[in-house]
Image 1 (cartoon, rainbow over the protein chains, first blue to last red):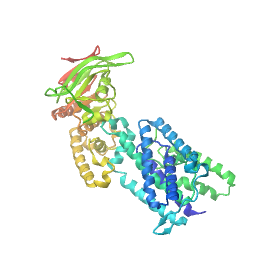
Image 2: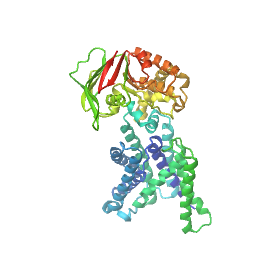
Image 3: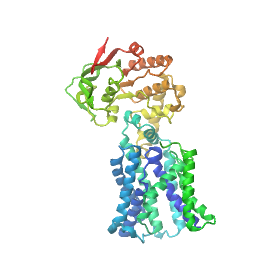
Image 4: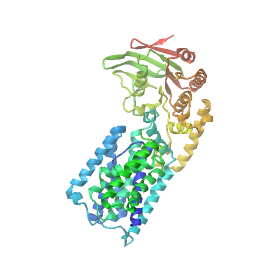
Length: 288
Length: 246
């Protein structure tokens, strides 16, 4: 078992869940478009690094900015929608982005994906080993965690929580909630770009099947199980869901049965959490 | 203020709200026909009417949640344009809903802080360029919030979750939030309903103080006696018109 690889995957998902938690946990907008933003930034990083040979640290801000621009689209079309309608709009967005990534063969390579993505170079040294990427991922993860920890008690987050708790009252206090929803979706998608770009360079190869609706559901499950509206819940959810298959692997079960058992355990955990801890294990906010 | 429009309406001294020839109907049901009404600055006004007569719709028309079929509404001499509801709130029209909308998962003090009209801490970019002003403003807002809470005798509950307050306290908190929001015109939807006589007395005293601070109040109320006791002017909705009552 490659523990460094597992730690790296945990770091990627922690960044994704913390980012998704800003939209879903603090603002109450349950978005299923997380994998779309994750995928867009992975593809953009791969394309720019491969075709133009730009350094990763130049490409990352471009990917973050591009995600913000794309998030404008989703904000424009969906923030006036509420609850189920917002969820459906984000699912539609996710499916559209997946279809574009999967079918735009000239650019994305279609089902063949993009191979041979260059590795990261820092001062002439190429990062090749899993340890290198685990350290870099760890640095990014700590920065993102520090950002959310320092922001969690600010008037900005307080306002997002008020939008979540009582949208109509927030409007009647003169707050432009569309603007705040745009800001929070933008910040969230920008942070997701960190995970997407790291994933692309670490793997050397990406294809659209890594960014399906299933991936978005997994990210949402992570924050729902861990709990929303705080920092510890999404971190726990991410670590738990990454480690679960590895723990199952420790038991002497045939590989063919392992996947089914994993799904059964996922399902059982979801049922138990929804039944006994509807706010998630560490959550402050309960989705209605 | 692009949500209000300069108009040829000359604001009379003391007039904060003027409604001209307002008509509203829903699916063939006419609620208002050519309604004219004026509210004077710094007064308490009550609006009575039977259930379904259009009292809440009247508030919805003023606050932009409904659009009139005809007619104009002027606030502080400017015509209200119907674009987004939050613009009208920013202009200075505050509303307390029949079921007071507060933020239950936040403390009473936090409810007031989030109600302030301008808080630099609510702008994401300010965290990078203007951290000091955020801290200073938060201190200033806390002082203002505590002084408002003391007027409503709610200071001792400032650290309680708003969701844990009684209905009467929630209504008081809701009015405090409008003051924190610097609303000039307060629309109160049944402030005295479902609260005991002690709370009504406490609320009446507070509304008097609000009025003495130059704010204008219009409230929809079924408890006519209590409302009349503190009102300068009373109105009644009847036959699709709003008429002054003696």
